Image (cartoon, each protein chain N blue to C red):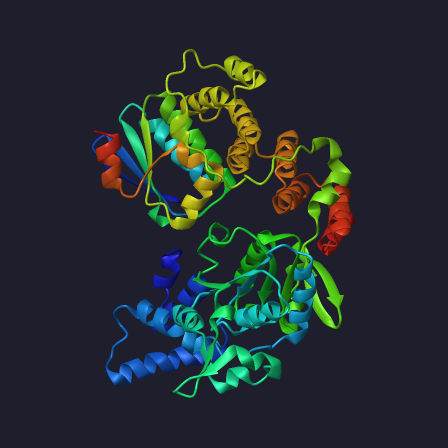
Length: 419
Length: 111
């Protein structure tokens, strides 16, 4: 748990609880939910169930029912379904992700729609609420949920003894539900990437910081050319434009992820030497040689030239363990990790290199090049922005502006620098 | 004052308060420089750190170097989830000795 201090330094119980909701769940605090929390405290007090101990557990249990609206229905956004189908027709086994899936109506609507059109697919539904996820897995619904369901899809439901509608196994089997707190857990470890992401009626509950995190996470997860759908109310949130391109078709607004590889290749053709998609693999540091005779920078460079990357890493690792301010081995190590296909490791060591050499233009450029080579374009854009903030070089501003414009991303904020 | 200090025999325990940035880092480094003859090493306890930026990290690397050059040890303890993330993002967790508690640091590093 983070920033507990902020929670505990609050003066009153209600302040503490609201702070907790803000930090733990990214919730936007407004008059309505402040009232609801006040009521909850009051009712617990009246009922004598107490609120003093484990107050935060009580909140964990109640927050979703109390503060989020979990009610939804099938075929709520039919225009989105049409565009999803169109996109999926040209893809092999596309991955679709419903963020804030609640009781699963959205995920199952897509499943029904694509199933009817004989498309192969995989759908994930993620939500922060345990109860909603469990309900989604049960796939049994009230009549309300079926209110917008077209007649031809009713065949996928069977009527149960307790006046409910149970969805058929054919529709359920391609959908996986996971409980994830996107603010706290790394979703990319559970879902490697998505062709289509839906975030409908989720961001409206969140505060600014949480919205930024959600959108950036989704944008990172999306494959190049992938689509993101969101409700009209959420579509106008500016952060989307930082990462994704605005699109509109058949009266439905959505976002697409620019194919940044294409754009970058045009600008930096000579830098590119793609290494496939093994960037996520983890390196086992115990395989490094322990006894290095005479570790020196020359030996490391020599090993790098001979393409004995593991040896070069072993030497550099020893060198920086002995002298953590020695920056050159960090750059060599980063290069070796890149050559071996461990892109994340390469970037991590080069970040340390940057930390030691902050404000050094040439070295920031070295890091930018690595971002390009490892296809980490959002990091590239982020660091380029930082570089502009530090040095305010016209060339950099133009470079960033070109990239953003070519990708169809929002370049508005650059106008401050252009003056 | 942005740091709080405690001494446990030959180990200096430093608690940076709130932000660990250039100023706090320099304060710790200057403080330790004066103690080099008296101590075996230092524990920097992060329990009261809310914020760490890259210049704070750079100061920490400098402190690590300072202590290494003088044959002293350095341990970092009580790192929050978010601060640990910053270390892992830069692989610096591989260069520092990081422990959950001061007691663990004392028994594994300073015995």
